[in-house]
Length: 245
Length: 190
Ligand SMILES: [Zn+2]
Image (cartoon, rainbow over the protein chains, first blue to last red):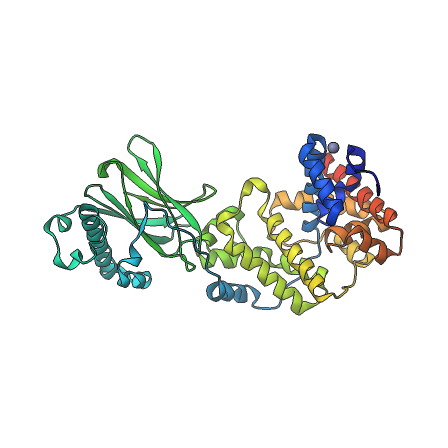
């Protein structure tokens, strides 16, 4: 197989085990990979062999790690995660950029946090009514924004933990505010709402910070009372958390 | 809440989902569930306790960080985690240009004895048992070739050098070993 192209299944199949085990390199590897991409038989064979290679890892010797191993891992998770940043879609406005104090929401709880969120919701309504660039109107307190009706609910994770809050604020358009403070670090997530008619709509998409935080205002194209629940979903469709509204 | 999930039947996927949300309790349970496997694999490849712990920590860090993007349709959590571990360990070996001790028959006889941790699910244990038996039944030279390639990440050329055999023979041993293991696992499926 030195001077001839390895383009027959017989020749390629001799290399599939090595490819499955991840030890094929260089030109040999690219020839086999290219063939497999275009040959259903060899691809099916490779999948079987990959299953064997995977199973092999399960019979590798086991050993007890040094004491405290899991705590050292957790410590590194807490302190050393790189931040992944992503672009913000236009329809989801990061509130934190507008209100500096919001960056301290993470540890806030109880009435303090609720007040902050209500202020944020009012701001959102103000922004919605008056357009972008009305940050200063928060202090002057236009009458309509502060009369906004607000529905809020906790964002509850699959394991039952509270990882944030969702608010619906009336206005035109109505706004959904999603505050996440314990989400997947640096992940891109979608915000979906379920409507009274059972439809699920993705209303916004954004990236959480390296510490899993983010607060977002999303204008809704549906009426406030049509929204029954909101949820946070990963790019592969896993529901991370829900809020019943 | 997930109280001490390393001992219970909380599915791996549920632990990962909770970890993706920053649930440290779930993360600790996940680490406890798999630390013997991850560290054991790293130690096998590296043959150095300190380097093995580095690699094992890094593997769990990556799993923790990518917990939210794990795609269960592509395979089991354990396989995903151990593949990460194996690749990191092999990278570490190559970076150090050190030559760890290869798997001798003693290690692989112990493997074949079916030792495993109590945390494993029944399903995993069952297919692992079959593989233990099938490995034990391989000729020793095929078992070594499969282990050198599959666990230790050695190429066929490296297997040939290690075993002091021609390249073609190394390739044949790897292929024959894997083919027999595949047949054993296929019997289980039917
Ligand atoms: Zn083919």
